[in-house]
Length: 337
Image 1 (cartoon, one colour):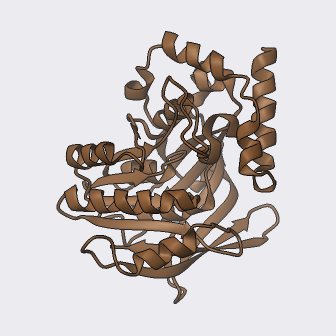
Image 2 (image 1 turned 120 degrees about the horizontal axis):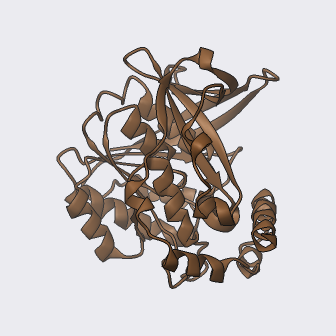
Protein backbone atom coordinates (compact mmCIF):
# COMPACT_ATOMS: atom_id res chain seq x y z
CA UNK A 1 0.00 0.00 0.00
CA UNK A 2 2.96 2.38 0.64
CA UNK A 3 4.07 1.99 -2.98
CA UNK A 4 0.59 2.69 -4.31
CA UNK A 5 0.25 5.71 -2.05
CA UNK A 6 3.57 7.13 -3.25
CA UNK A 7 2.57 6.70 -6.90
CA UNK A 8 -0.75 8.45 -6.28
CA UNK A 9 1.05 11.35 -4.61
CA UNK A 10 3.70 11.51 -7.33
CA UNK A 11 1.13 11.48 -10.14
CA UNK A 12 -0.87 14.31 -8.60
CA UNK A 13 2.24 16.38 -7.96
CA UNK A 14 3.55 16.04 -11.52
CA UNK A 15 0.17 16.85 -13.00
CA UNK A 16 -0.31 19.98 -10.91
CA UNK A 17 3.09 21.26 -12.02
CA UNK A 18 2.85 20.15 -15.65
CA UNK A 19 3.04 23.61 -17.18
CA UNK A 20 5.95 24.64 -14.97
CA UNK A 21 8.22 21.64 -15.55
CA UNK A 22 10.38 20.93 -18.57
CA UNK A 23 9.78 17.86 -20.70
CA UNK A 24 13.19 16.43 -19.88
CA UNK A 25 12.56 16.72 -16.17
CA UNK A 26 9.19 15.03 -16.50
CA UNK A 27 10.77 12.10 -18.31
CA UNK A 28 13.59 11.92 -15.84
CA UNK A 29 11.28 11.36 -12.88
CA UNK A 30 11.48 7.74 -11.75
CA UNK A 31 8.29 5.79 -12.28
CA UNK A 32 8.24 3.61 -9.23
CA UNK A 33 5.27 1.62 -10.47
CA UNK A 34 6.68 0.48 -13.84
CA UNK A 35 7.64 -3.02 -12.73
CA UNK A 36 4.43 -3.48 -10.75
CA UNK A 37 2.12 -2.49 -13.63
CA UNK A 38 4.05 -4.71 -16.05
CA UNK A 39 3.65 -7.75 -13.80
CA UNK A 40 0.03 -6.86 -13.16
CA UNK A 41 -0.78 -6.58 -16.87
CA UNK A 42 0.80 -9.99 -17.47
CA UNK A 43 -1.12 -11.67 -14.68
CA UNK A 44 -4.53 -10.05 -15.06
CA UNK A 45 -6.99 -10.96 -17.77
CA UNK A 46 -7.38 -8.22 -20.38
CA UNK A 47 -11.05 -9.04 -20.84
CA UNK A 48 -11.90 -5.67 -19.27
CA UNK A 49 -10.98 -4.08 -22.61
CA UNK A 50 -13.81 -5.92 -24.32
CA UNK A 51 -16.20 -6.47 -21.47
CA UNK A 52 -16.32 -3.04 -19.88
CA UNK A 53 -19.50 -1.03 -20.18
CA UNK A 54 -19.49 2.75 -20.19
CA UNK A 55 -21.77 4.48 -17.73
CA UNK A 56 -24.61 6.56 -19.13
CA UNK A 57 -28.12 7.17 -17.93
CA UNK A 58 -31.17 9.19 -18.87
CA UNK A 59 -31.83 11.63 -16.08
CA UNK A 60 -32.96 15.16 -15.30
CA UNK A 61 -31.31 18.18 -13.72
CA UNK A 62 -33.40 17.54 -10.61
CA UNK A 63 -31.34 14.40 -9.97
CA UNK A 64 -28.00 16.21 -9.86
CA UNK A 65 -26.21 19.22 -8.37
CA UNK A 66 -24.74 21.61 -10.94
CA UNK A 67 -20.98 22.16 -10.70
CA UNK A 68 -20.45 24.26 -13.80
CA UNK A 69 -21.98 24.77 -17.21
CA UNK A 70 -20.32 24.85 -20.64
CA UNK A 71 -21.80 26.72 -23.61
CA UNK A 72 -20.16 26.78 -27.05
CA UNK A 73 -20.67 29.64 -29.54
CA UNK A 74 -19.52 30.40 -33.06
CA UNK A 75 -18.09 33.79 -34.07
CA UNK A 76 -21.60 35.13 -34.69
CA UNK A 77 -22.66 34.22 -31.14
CA UNK A 78 -24.90 31.38 -32.27
CA UNK A 79 -24.98 28.58 -29.69
CA UNK A 80 -23.57 25.37 -31.12
CA UNK A 81 -23.81 23.07 -28.10
CA UNK A 82 -23.80 22.89 -24.33
CA UNK A 83 -23.45 20.55 -21.38
CA UNK A 84 -23.42 20.68 -17.60
CA UNK A 85 -20.89 19.16 -15.24
CA UNK A 86 -22.76 17.80 -12.24
CA UNK A 87 -22.60 15.74 -9.08
CA UNK A 88 -25.32 13.10 -9.38
CA UNK A 89 -27.58 12.58 -6.39
CA UNK A 90 -28.70 9.17 -7.66
CA UNK A 91 -26.68 5.97 -7.62
CA UNK A 92 -24.03 5.52 -10.32
CA UNK A 93 -22.39 2.41 -11.66
CA UNK A 94 -19.23 2.71 -9.58
CA UNK A 95 -21.09 2.56 -6.26
CA UNK A 96 -21.16 -1.25 -6.33
CA UNK A 97 -17.93 -1.87 -8.23
CA UNK A 98 -14.80 -3.28 -6.72
CA UNK A 99 -11.54 -1.40 -7.18
CA UNK A 100 -9.96 -2.33 -10.52
CA UNK A 101 -6.27 -2.41 -11.46
CA UNK A 102 -6.21 1.27 -12.50
CA UNK A 103 -7.57 2.36 -9.12
CA UNK A 104 -5.23 -0.02 -7.29
CA UNK A 105 -2.13 1.74 -8.59
CA UNK A 106 -3.16 5.27 -9.55
CA UNK A 107 -5.27 8.07 -8.12
CA UNK A 108 -8.56 8.47 -9.99
CA UNK A 109 -11.46 10.91 -9.97
CA UNK A 110 -14.93 10.72 -11.52
CA UNK A 111 -16.51 13.55 -13.46
CA UNK A 112 -20.11 13.60 -14.67
CA UNK A 113 -21.38 15.46 -17.73
CA UNK A 114 -25.03 15.97 -18.61
CA UNK A 115 -26.01 16.51 -22.26
CA UNK A 116 -29.42 17.46 -23.67
CA UNK A 117 -30.88 14.96 -26.16
CA UNK A 118 -33.40 15.15 -28.99
CA UNK A 119 -35.84 13.08 -26.92
CA UNK A 120 -36.03 15.69 -24.17
CA UNK A 121 -34.28 13.69 -21.45
CA UNK A 122 -30.78 14.61 -20.37
CA UNK A 123 -28.04 12.02 -20.79
CA UNK A 124 -25.60 11.64 -17.88
CA UNK A 125 -22.11 10.42 -18.81
CA UNK A 126 -19.39 9.37 -16.40
CA UNK A 127 -15.69 9.82 -17.12
CA UNK A 128 -12.92 8.50 -14.89
CA UNK A 129 -9.75 10.56 -14.86
CA UNK A 130 -6.47 9.06 -13.75
CA UNK A 131 -3.16 10.51 -12.58
CA UNK A 132 -0.44 12.02 -14.76
CA UNK A 133 1.73 9.07 -13.77
CA UNK A 134 -0.64 6.79 -15.69
CA UNK A 135 -2.18 8.87 -18.46
CA UNK A 136 0.37 11.63 -19.04
CA UNK A 137 -1.34 14.35 -21.11
CA UNK A 138 -4.37 12.09 -21.53
CA UNK A 139 -5.00 11.70 -17.81
CA UNK A 140 -7.68 14.36 -17.53
CA UNK A 141 -10.60 15.81 -19.48
CA UNK A 142 -9.31 18.96 -21.18
CA UNK A 143 -11.59 21.89 -22.12
CA UNK A 144 -11.12 21.07 -25.82
CA UNK A 145 -12.64 17.63 -25.29
CA UNK A 146 -15.67 19.17 -23.56
CA UNK A 147 -16.03 21.63 -26.46
CA UNK A 148 -15.86 18.82 -29.03
CA UNK A 149 -18.35 16.66 -27.08
CA UNK A 150 -20.75 19.61 -26.77
CA UNK A 151 -20.46 20.27 -30.49
CA UNK A 152 -21.15 16.63 -31.40
CA UNK A 153 -24.20 16.58 -29.10
CA UNK A 154 -25.52 19.88 -30.50
CA UNK A 155 -28.30 20.19 -33.05
CA UNK A 156 -25.95 20.79 -35.99
CA UNK A 157 -24.06 17.49 -35.60
CA UNK A 158 -26.07 15.05 -33.49
CA UNK A 159 -28.47 13.79 -36.16
CA UNK A 160 -25.87 13.89 -38.93
CA UNK A 161 -23.55 11.41 -37.19
CA UNK A 162 -26.24 9.04 -35.98
CA UNK A 163 -25.35 5.49 -37.09
CA UNK A 164 -22.12 6.85 -38.62
CA UNK A 165 -18.70 5.39 -37.87
CA UNK A 166 -16.84 7.94 -35.73
CA UNK A 167 -13.11 7.58 -35.04
CA UNK A 168 -11.53 9.78 -32.40
CA UNK A 169 -7.82 10.55 -32.50
CA UNK A 170 -5.97 11.22 -29.24
CA UNK A 171 -9.00 10.18 -27.19
CA UNK A 172 -7.43 10.67 -23.75
CA UNK A 173 -10.27 10.01 -21.30
CA UNK A 174 -12.70 9.47 -24.20
CA UNK A 175 -15.47 12.00 -23.54
CA UNK A 176 -16.14 12.83 -27.25
CA UNK A 177 -16.20 9.12 -28.13
CA UNK A 178 -18.62 8.36 -25.30
CA UNK A 179 -20.81 11.31 -26.33
CA UNK A 180 -20.93 10.17 -29.95
CA UNK A 181 -21.86 6.67 -28.80
CA UNK A 182 -24.41 7.42 -26.09
CA UNK A 183 -25.91 10.76 -27.13
CA UNK A 184 -25.62 10.64 -30.94
CA UNK A 185 -26.04 6.90 -31.55
CA UNK A 186 -22.81 6.55 -33.53
CA UNK A 187 -20.57 3.55 -33.99
CA UNK A 188 -17.30 4.55 -32.38
CA UNK A 189 -13.60 3.76 -32.19
CA UNK A 190 -11.45 5.53 -29.59
CA UNK A 191 -7.75 5.70 -30.45
CA UNK A 192 -4.69 6.90 -28.59
CA UNK A 193 -1.12 5.75 -28.04
CA UNK A 194 0.15 4.09 -24.89
CA UNK A 195 2.91 1.72 -23.81
CA UNK A 196 2.74 -1.96 -24.61
CA UNK A 197 4.08 -4.53 -22.21
CA UNK A 198 7.63 -3.70 -23.28
CA UNK A 199 7.22 -0.20 -21.80
CA UNK A 200 8.79 1.50 -24.82
CA UNK A 201 9.07 5.29 -24.92
CA UNK A 202 9.94 6.65 -28.38
CA UNK A 203 12.24 9.69 -28.55
CA UNK A 204 11.14 12.55 -26.29
CA UNK A 205 7.45 11.63 -26.37
CA UNK A 206 5.54 11.35 -23.11
CA UNK A 207 3.71 8.08 -23.62
CA UNK A 208 0.93 6.97 -21.23
CA UNK A 209 1.35 3.74 -19.28
CA UNK A 210 -0.27 0.45 -20.30
CA UNK A 211 -3.14 0.82 -17.83
CA UNK A 212 -4.13 4.04 -19.60
CA UNK A 213 -5.68 1.81 -22.27
CA UNK A 214 -7.66 -0.02 -19.59
CA UNK A 215 -8.97 3.29 -18.26
CA UNK A 216 -9.97 4.45 -21.74
CA UNK A 217 -11.87 1.19 -22.31
CA UNK A 218 -13.59 1.62 -18.95
CA UNK A 219 -14.79 5.07 -19.99
CA UNK A 220 -16.01 4.38 -23.52
CA UNK A 221 -17.32 0.85 -22.95
CA UNK A 222 -15.59 -0.74 -25.94
CA UNK A 223 -12.08 -1.74 -26.91
CA UNK A 224 -9.91 1.23 -27.93
CA UNK A 225 -7.20 1.05 -30.58
CA UNK A 226 -3.57 1.70 -29.70
CA UNK A 227 -2.63 3.91 -32.66
CA UNK A 228 0.78 5.48 -33.27
CA UNK A 229 0.69 8.37 -35.76
CA UNK A 230 4.31 7.57 -36.59
CA UNK A 231 3.36 4.05 -37.78
CA UNK A 232 1.94 4.36 -41.29
CA UNK A 233 1.08 0.66 -41.58
CA UNK A 234 -1.06 0.62 -38.40
CA UNK A 235 -2.90 3.77 -39.52
CA UNK A 236 -3.71 2.19 -42.86
CA UNK A 237 -4.89 -0.97 -41.10
CA UNK A 238 -7.26 0.99 -38.83
CA UNK A 239 -8.63 3.00 -41.74
CA UNK A 240 -9.43 -0.06 -43.84
CA UNK A 241 -10.76 -2.16 -40.94
CA UNK A 242 -12.99 0.45 -39.27
CA UNK A 243 -13.67 2.63 -42.35
CA UNK A 244 -14.56 5.81 -40.43
CA UNK A 245 -17.17 8.17 -41.85
CA UNK A 246 -15.89 11.02 -39.71
CA UNK A 247 -12.59 11.62 -37.89
CA UNK A 248 -12.76 13.76 -34.76
CA UNK A 249 -10.15 14.96 -32.30
CA UNK A 250 -9.39 17.65 -29.73
CA UNK A 251 -6.16 19.30 -28.56
CA UNK A 252 -4.08 17.10 -30.85
CA UNK A 253 -1.33 19.57 -31.75
CA UNK A 254 1.10 19.59 -28.84
CA UNK A 255 4.56 18.53 -29.95
CA UNK A 256 6.14 19.92 -33.18
CA UNK A 257 7.50 16.43 -33.95
CA UNK A 258 3.92 15.18 -34.25
CA UNK A 259 2.77 17.72 -36.87
CA UNK A 260 3.88 15.80 -39.96
CA UNK A 261 2.75 12.37 -38.62
CA UNK A 262 -0.66 13.81 -37.67
CA UNK A 263 -1.15 15.30 -41.15
CA UNK A 264 -0.17 11.95 -42.68
CA UNK A 265 -2.59 10.13 -40.33
CA UNK A 266 -5.46 12.40 -41.37
CA UNK A 267 -4.62 11.94 -45.04
CA UNK A 268 -4.59 8.13 -44.78
CA UNK A 269 -7.80 7.97 -42.75
CA UNK A 270 -9.65 10.29 -45.13
CA UNK A 271 -8.50 8.44 -48.24
CA UNK A 272 -9.33 4.98 -46.94
CA UNK A 273 -12.29 5.66 -44.70
CA UNK A 274 -16.01 5.28 -45.23
CA UNK A 275 -18.35 7.11 -47.55
CA UNK A 276 -18.53 10.40 -45.66
CA UNK A 277 -14.80 11.02 -45.26
CA UNK A 278 -15.25 14.12 -43.13
CA UNK A 279 -13.25 15.57 -40.26
CA UNK A 280 -13.90 17.72 -37.20
CA UNK A 281 -11.05 18.93 -34.98
CA UNK A 282 -11.17 21.31 -32.02
CA UNK A 283 -7.85 22.88 -31.01
CA UNK A 284 -7.29 25.35 -28.14
CA UNK A 285 -6.14 28.90 -28.87
CA UNK A 286 -4.30 31.51 -26.79
CA UNK A 287 -4.51 33.07 -24.31
CA UNK A 288 -5.93 30.14 -22.31
CA UNK A 289 -3.70 27.60 -24.06
CA UNK A 290 -0.34 27.79 -25.82
CA UNK A 291 0.54 25.03 -28.28
CA UNK A 292 3.94 25.40 -29.88
CA UNK A 293 3.08 23.33 -32.95
CA UNK A 294 -0.28 24.96 -33.72
CA UNK A 295 0.87 27.84 -36.01
CA UNK A 296 2.71 25.45 -38.34
CA UNK A 297 -0.13 22.92 -38.30
CA UNK A 298 -2.62 25.65 -39.13
CA UNK A 299 -0.45 26.94 -41.97
CA UNK A 300 -0.08 23.47 -43.45
CA UNK A 301 -3.85 22.92 -43.37
CA UNK A 302 -4.50 26.03 -45.47
CA UNK A 303 -3.60 23.98 -48.54
CA UNK A 304 -5.97 21.18 -47.48
CA UNK A 305 -5.49 17.56 -46.47
CA UNK A 306 -4.73 15.41 -49.50
CA UNK A 307 -7.22 16.49 -52.16
CA UNK A 308 -9.77 17.83 -49.64
CA UNK A 309 -10.33 21.48 -48.77
CA UNK A 310 -10.31 22.54 -45.15
CA UNK A 311 -12.60 25.10 -43.49
CA UNK A 312 -11.35 26.82 -40.31
CA UNK A 313 -13.11 29.19 -37.93
CA UNK A 314 -12.91 30.17 -34.28
CA UNK A 315 -15.29 29.24 -31.47
CA UNK A 316 -15.72 30.39 -27.90
CA UNK A 317 -16.77 28.35 -24.88
CA UNK A 318 -18.12 30.01 -21.74
CA UNK A 319 -17.61 28.07 -18.52
CA UNK A 320 -19.84 29.31 -15.69
CA UNK A 321 -19.27 28.20 -12.12
CA UNK A 322 -22.45 27.30 -10.25
CA UNK A 323 -20.99 28.23 -6.87
CA UNK A 324 -19.54 31.66 -7.73
CA UNK A 325 -21.36 32.53 -10.98
CA UNK A 326 -17.98 33.54 -12.40
CA UNK A 327 -17.31 33.02 -16.11
CA UNK A 328 -14.22 31.67 -17.81
CA UNK A 329 -13.71 31.95 -21.57
CA UNK A 330 -11.85 29.50 -23.81
CA UNK A 331 -11.19 30.03 -27.51
CA UNK A 332 -10.83 27.20 -30.03
CA UNK A 333 -9.97 26.67 -33.65
CA UNK A 334 -12.55 24.50 -35.42
CA UNK A 335 -11.20 22.59 -38.43
CA UNK A 336 -13.66 20.90 -40.77
CA UNK A 337 -13.73 18.83 -43.93
